[in-house]
Structures are given as C-alpha cells and as structure tokens.
Amino acid sequence: MVLGIKHRGQPRAKVKWPVHMHTTRGSIYGVTTNISTSGAHISCQEPSQVEGKLLVTIEVPHSRSLNIVAMVVWQTVSTPHESGSDCGIGVKFAHISADDRQLLQSLLAKHFERN
Image 1 (cartoon, one colour):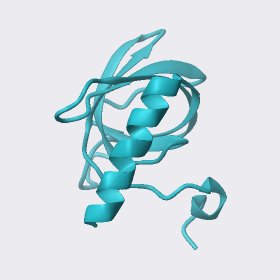
Image 2 (spheres, rainbow, N blue to C red):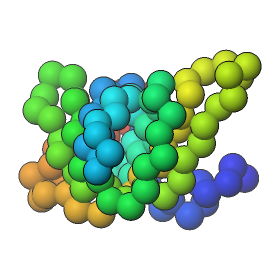
Image 3 (cartoon, rainbow, N blue to C red):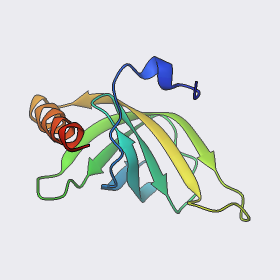
C-alpha cells in the first residue's frame, strides 16, 4: 500500500492542471499531478514552506477556474541531485463552492470514462 492512499476515500485522476496558490507569504505556481473531489497533489518548482489554509486556483483546460480553500496536509522537497520537481504539496479541500464541486465532479467523471 502506498502511504495515505487507503485513507483518501476518493479516486484520484492523474491530470496536469496549472495551479496558483495564494499564501500569506506570496504566490506559488504549480501543476496538479492528481486530484479528487476531496484533495490534490500539487507539484511546483519553488520549494516553499507552506502550512495551514490557502486559496488554490486551479486552471481547468476548456473551462472556468476552480477557486478552493485548501488545507496543507503534507509537503516534500527534493534535494538538488534528485530528478523531477523541487516541491510536492498535498492539500485537502476545506471549502469548495457547490458550483465548483459540481464542475470538478463532472470533469473527474469524464476523465474516468476516458481512462
């Protein structure tokens, strides 16, 4: 078992959607590596110590953006010799509007139908 997956409860779609995280220390840009209706993994190039709640704007291709208040659950930082991005952030969605939740559910259902 991969750590944490059993506790998610929601299937995760592997999608790469641009993300803008608004924190008390400034903005961080990244991309989702996977997402569900309850949370996401975000990969970013800028290692940053983020914690607590933050506003996450997810740019969904061919649709409007999702604006979600999320709670940082975990984060990782790669060492310079490791390949891949520098930072990974796991977030749990704390507040998502009914319209954004419905749009996200629809997008995920379409993704799972195709894959």
